Length: 254
Image 1 (tube, rainbow, N blue to C red):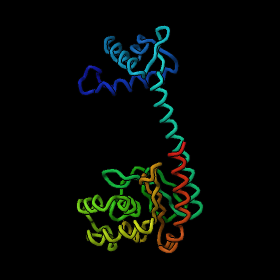
Image 2 (image 1 turned 135 degrees about the horizontal axis):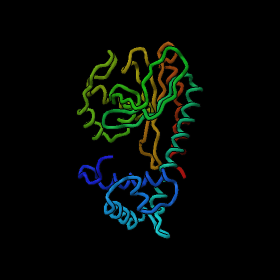
Image 3 (image 1 turned 180 degrees about the vertical axis):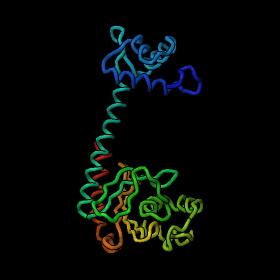
Image 4 (image 1 turned 120 degrees about the vertical axis):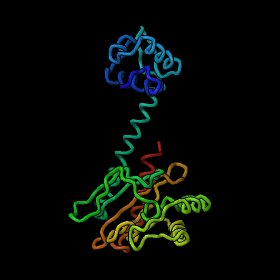
């Protein structure tokens, strides 16, 4: 880690580093023990520990520092999210076995739709996009599904801001045509990629909602047209909706 006195290292990062050290030690510690592990000036350790004690992140008993209630709540919440993602992956596996194609869990980010998780098929011929990959909004089933969740004004502004690059002859490059397509998606409740992102590949996406019914992610299935036609994609709609509802339960219900 950088010198803690370097102004480029924010105090909140130093706090997180101290919590990480405490987690590695695995027992209550004294400020001196912390200092032995990080090698920072004593006044820095003292100041940070006092801040965490006052904030309820740490507690002190018999001169030793323990995780406070706030730290434990954060740790429990993060662990719960991890368990949730394990549950999501199990759902993706079931969907992939049911339809025999690749299944993706996709979230919107400023750079595009990001593959958060996926389950690949064992077919030799498939379109492989690694987890963490960003794909465009305007020519993917998941991206168009996300845009359909926006208000008409926000949707119009987003379409105007996008660079509607043609990735295949089927890509929507005209704003008005794309807007009509997204209006249809909003009515039907699912989105199709009709070889708009990759020639020879078809996809369908449905929304995954949060506890308040707002768009959270897209659940999508894609496959080569030799195995997964548009008719096959449409036929998977009901099963995908069931899976999306299950994911909402896993992630957002206590």
